[in-house]
Image (cartoon, rainbow, N blue to C red; front, side, top):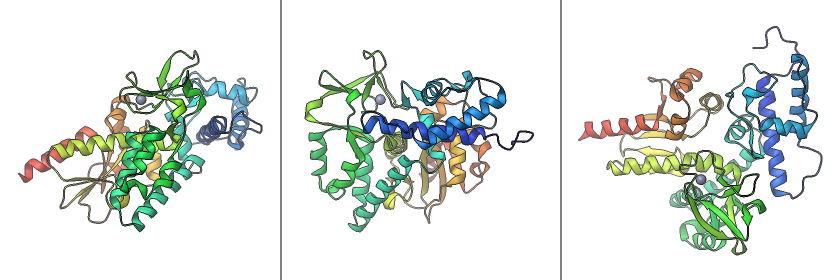
Length: 368
Ligand SMILES: [Zn+2]
């Protein structure tokens, strides 16, 4: 992949992953620790050094520093003066939008495998799994996942009420850890605005008059949800949980509901998350639902960490949520091309949400 290029030249793929990680680190610092203080995150500085080498090699101007690098990150890759070979990004994708990391940025950052956010997400989920397993309360694990997906923003009072439920009390400490206070930028005139589509927060754009849902996969970003009084306390799910739990979670709940309506047995996150969905009582089908924006990056992740269906599963599927299939032409074909292990006939097959529901329906008809 680097044939004919000097060995000191950084690989585009590594540069972009490092830049994405650096941006996530930087955003984490500025949004939680108050005014930013130097030094910049190590990944951001290292990405700037790599980009400078790449620009120099291509004889185009490099960013003058981290501040300019962050401005570049707002620009779609197709408009960059520096070009890259062998990178898993589309020309219309950017890393930042209005100063906030995009879903593209999250996906690229997570592929490095050492991102703080992913480690924290995994540690939190693992700790909920330990607690609920020790208490022999699989229903508590399911209630935890549901709460995060259905209420990514929540008032302090509502959260207290939720935690008083016996199923959630056992993981109260973990639930509180999953949420952070709504950021100052979300509060205007004492009010925090929510989104009716995803139940997350709406944040102001640069002009401070337009409010927008920041969830790239929101099913209905233009319908406002209720306003919360900031003084009463408003909590917002941590960013990494919104990306890797809520986004696929919406599809998981929707698919489970559709299957339940068919009169077919379906379980969400069975046996403490052995898979996302288990469908049919006997000879069950095991499902892993994915909501990644890019099929190529998802393929990379699935090669790093393949889906291992639970023992006893008759068939196993990677199901791609309909939002992603709709947003990217030929999503399934591109995913299977980049990850041949997911083609029909293999032990785990990648399919669209729609095709999966049809397969369930056909099996149900066949049994009837
Ligand atoms: Zn929304």
